[in-house]
Amino acid sequence: MNEKPNNPYAAGPVIEWKMTKEELEAYLAKHPIVYREELKPSPTFQMDKWA
Image 1: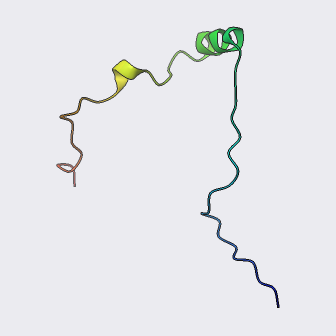
Image 2: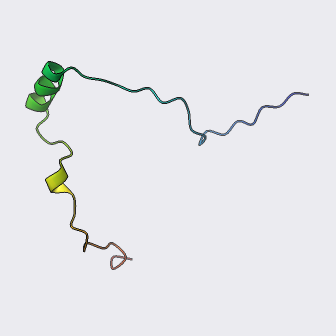
């Protein structure tokens, strides 16, 4: 019997999604809350105190 391992957590193929500059500007106008560098927590922020 030829069994292939069925691991749902294994990494699949990576599909790179590219937007044109105009599409990106339209998306940001429609969805203003996006990941931005200045919104990252400071390096001193630690979650181990929450546990």
